[in-house]
Image (cartoon, rainbow, N blue to C red; front, side):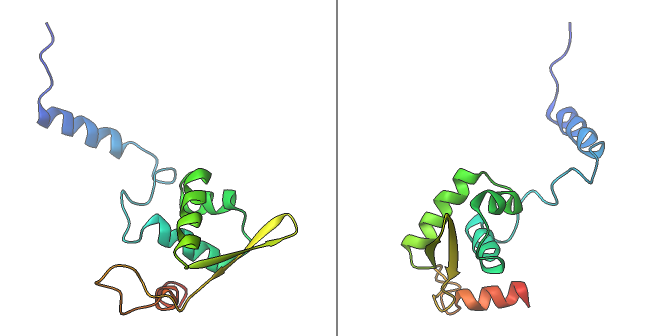
Length: 117
């Protein structure tokens, strides 16, 4: 009869399988310092004419998640969307302040300047 795996053996097995993963196909990190909302905002600032499918690929989330984030950003006044022909053009409103009390003394423009240099 096979003995149940202990926590330490499960961890060892998990570490071994992670170590065998090709580093080029593995994600760079398990978590990041910026949210998906920030990533979408940064992508649209860099290229205001991107289609949301392209934003999704850049950020690494689904197109539907990008649609929800764009809706959030637009409703809260962080971006403006303008229809140009069959596509959308996005304008990031960089004078808006960041939302969390810790960073509320900074603007979207400050964040973008930090990222884009």
